[in-house]
Length: 566
Image (cartoon, rainbow, N blue to C red; front, side):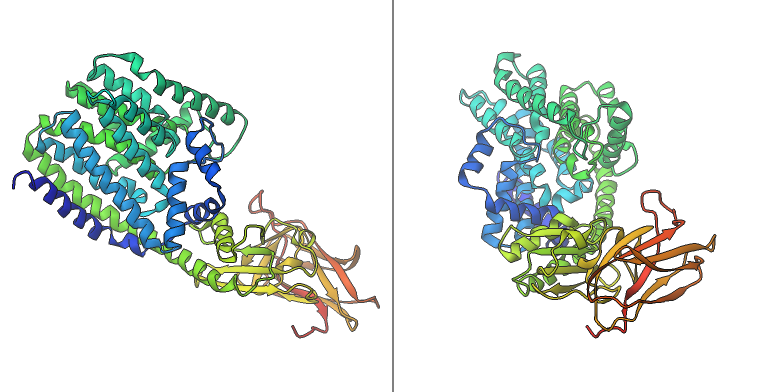
C-alpha cells in the first residue's frame, strides 16, 4: 500500500488539475495553431525526415517535433479543439512524472522536499498559456526531452549517454532554446558527475553548429525574432520573466540570494539550469511570453526542493497555503481573458466554415478587421483548410491598392469583422460581375474597388488618407457625383478643402470644418461616356493625430447619381 500511495496521489492530482483547468477545453484555436495545422499538411515524408535529421537552422522556425504534433492531430481529429488541449495536458502530466523521478533518483531528495519542489512546477500560473494553448506544445515537448536527457545522462548505464544525446537532439527539434542544454549538462558534470568532460563533446558540437547559424541569420534580419544583446533589451526581458516567477513584479530576482543563503549544490544547479535555458529567451525581447518560462521553471523546482529540505516543514506549508490560492486567483483572471478571445476566434472560424464552401469560384479574400488572437495568418490558414487548396490570395482592406491589385471581374470574397457584436459577415463578387456605380460604406461595401489610401472600416464610415482612390462604373444616365463625409468628432480647427477628380479631371471641391458633423457634397457632371472611372480624393491640410496614419476624410458614401439599385 505504501508503494501505491505516490501513484494514487499523482492520479488524484491529475484529476484535480484537469478539473481546475476544465475551462481550457472550452477555449479555441489561435492563429498560430490553425496555421500549423494547415501548412504541415503539405510536408512530404522526405521533408519530415530531413527536418528531424538535419543540423540546419531554420529561419522560419521549423520545429519538426512540435509541428508533427499538429500534423498528426489535424489528420486524426480535425478542428476538435478539446483533443489538442488534452494532448498538452497529457504532456504536462508526463513532465510531472519525469520531474518527480529526476528529483528522487538524480538529486536524492526524500519524498517531502521532492513534493514541495514538484508542486511549484505542477501548478504555476506564470506559464498559464503553456497549459491552455496548444501553440506552446513546443515548450512542453522541449521540457519532456530535456528531463529525459538529464535522467539518462545521470544514469551509470553504458548506453545511457547515447539515450541522453538522442533526447537532447529531440529537444533541439522541439524548441531552439534547448541549444543551452549542453551547458546545463556541464553544470551537472561539475557538481554531481565525475568531471568526464569528453562525454559532452557531441552535445556541444551540435549546440555550437546551430548557435553559429542562428547568429549569422540574426545578423541579417529585423523581426520580432531578432536577437538583442544590448543591456537595456536584456533587462527588459529579465524583468518580464522575473515577474512571472512569483507572479509579482521583479520578485524572481530575489532568487539570486539563494546560493548565498543555502550552501547546496542542488540550489546552484537548479538556478543555473533555469538561467541557461532562459538565456535565448532573454535575447528575444521582441517576444515576451510567460509560457517560455515553462522549461526554466523545471530548474527552479529543483532549487525549491532544496530550499524545502533546509527549512521547517511548517514554513513550506505556510508558503503553499498562500501560493496555491494566489495561483488559482491568477488562473481565474487569465481564464476570463482567454475565453473571451477564444469566443471571438470560434465565432469567426465557425462562420468561415459556412462562407468558404459557398464561394467555390473565389480565388482572393479580403479581410476587413481581424480578431485580436486570430491574426491574419489564422484567417488565411482557416480559409485554406475549408477550401481544401493553398493557391489562394489574401489582402487586408487597409494599406493595399485593391483596385489595381485585383483584376476587374475576378471572384473575390470580403470578410468583414464586427468587433462590437463579434460577428463575421461576408460579401462576394462572382467572376464577371460588374463594378458598383455608388458605394455606401458598410460591411458589404465592395472594397475590391478601393484603391490606395484607405483604412479599416470604423462603424458607418471609413477613414481615408489625405490622398485616396477608388474605381467606379459610370452608368449611362449619370448626371452628378456625390460624396458623403463625417466631419466629427475631431475638434474644430482650420478649414480643410476636399477635392474630387474623375479620370484625372477635377470635378469640384468644398471647404469643410472638422467637428461639423455629416455633409453631403454633390457636383454636376458634364456629359461623358459610360464605363470604368477612377475617382481621386485629395484633402488639404491633413488631420495628423498620428504621423504614421495621417487622416483625410471619414467617408460614408460616394458614387454617381442617380443611384442604381444594387
